[in-house]
Length: 149
Image (cartoon, rainbow, N blue to C red; front, top):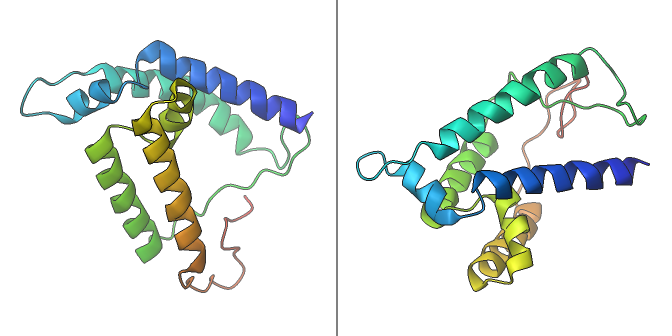
């Protein structure tokens, strides 16, 4: 049942990306072009996503298990470390250069475009490389993947 829930959530997310035009790298790059032909479509998409997700997130914070019974693990919101800053910078640079982030990249795979294949391939290679990098030691009482809230 958890896999069905994840599949439905992924289909809803992918459909929303396609409907909003966020799978088109030109739309995303136009949003980032604040000094040129700026397109605010991404800002409206983000605002809509926040309006939908905020009430659900507030509800989830009060629970230890999902509706389908899976354990809820939220990330540590208090620790800012080098891997977080470095990963954020790398994500931003890749997003700014390509106009694609991982969600739309996966949706774009269905198009079979070389740009989508290159992007998703790069994400996979980057993820594999990251597995071999030294990891910082987790603080006492916290897990490296997140803190139970």
